[in-house]
Image (cartoon, rainbow, N blue to C red):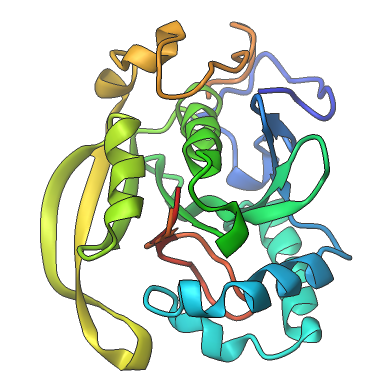
Length: 251
């Protein structure tokens, strides 16, 4: 992971004592092929294009699609998401191809409880980016951010039990299936859907094989030791203008 800027930290201020709004979070994460960053004003048109291309692909998993009807909806979403990032209320990001800058999809750390450092990863990819391992790479970056920079006590990924591609992302990254929640969320058409709940705890994270450079994705550089402690659409990444979170989607 690479930081977009350096910030001077008061040595007397620890991560556990900081107010969330004061926590310094890298605004640029880079893997071998993807770049992950917060949404910015002006990203709305690229987001709208990705959504329009992928409506049939996303429809089984993403109830927010019905609220995304034009480019202005998408632009409003990215502006609001940037504000929520600054307030540390929600950490929504776009996933971009490093070489071309093309938007591949969306992800983020959502449903945050700063008191116990709990986060939920959600994700979705545009239809033409599916099947290349981009989501695996992006989710790996966000998992490292959560544990190595934000000192996560727990990270979750949730997905519809019918969403096999999303489930495989969680499994390949070493997340543990903790529960199957019956009729736990309202899917498209307000139909009650069952979801898988995957989790990762700090003691499980440090034992993951890919932290040593093994598969599933190439390791990215970790923050220095002195840094502050740190598919189909998944069931939790905010993707559309008015959605508080998007559920997980493709690899």
